[in-house]
Amino acid sequence: MRTHVVLRHCGIVLLIISFLLIMSAITALLFPSDNSFVPLAVSGLSALVSGLLPVLLTKSVDKIQAKEGYTIVLCAWITAWLFGALPFMIYGGEFSFINALFQTVSIATTTGFATADTDVWPSFCIGILIVCSIICGCAGSTSGGIKIDRMVLVGKSIRYKLHQFRDPQLVLRSRFDGRFCRPDEISQAQLFILMYLGLIFIGAELNIGAGMDLRSGISAAIACMGNVGPGFGQVGSMNNYADLPTVIKLSSMVLMLAGRLEIYPLILAFRR
Image 1: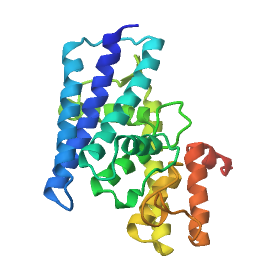
Image 2: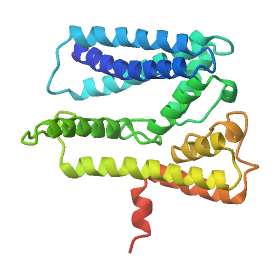
Image 3: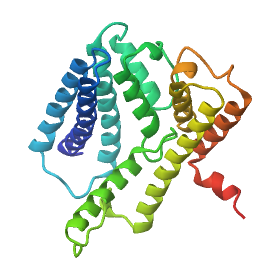
């Protein structure tokens, strides 16, 4: 197994995490509601430096071996957990290392366990957990969410389309896992993400219309669609769904089923 291949791809994951953390830090600076700017900025810069080193010092390869692929997935998840928990730990307070790490892993893997009341956490922490709830696991994972592979595939297709806008004669094809992707594969990923976010929007509208506040309604829809469990507000980690109206429970069950079956089987089951 080539260690430099694993390190390079873990570095790429860190660069993505650093971008998200730095954007969150900029948001915290522009809209200061708590003391979250410093933890986010420090975490983002740490992830940036840690990611740049292996990317700059190792060479890209065209093909990844099976064992290397498994190791990359494992190491990338652990890396994402550690740096995802870093802002919580820097912030201090009730965010001990184990609580911060446990909560990040629980949400990202859609396990749904909780060790602390996440409703009292700063807004940037809640934002990180919501992003984890939407994306969740990798291809083939039993977790819910959009899945990282679809995000990567659609991101690459958007980049290639932008290049084609500049040069219409340019022919580019998206490559994923060492092979070129068919146009229908890209279209399916784009359609899935669109339907996934659309169902969250419809579920959130139903929740809010049935009496939930904005924060609770949106987070409940995201949590049910991703099979995460706890959301925020009325469905936070220290609360449950027991006191919600029947209409919200029914819509939540539909979202949970659609998220677990990844939408398509549910639609095809009712198609003539």
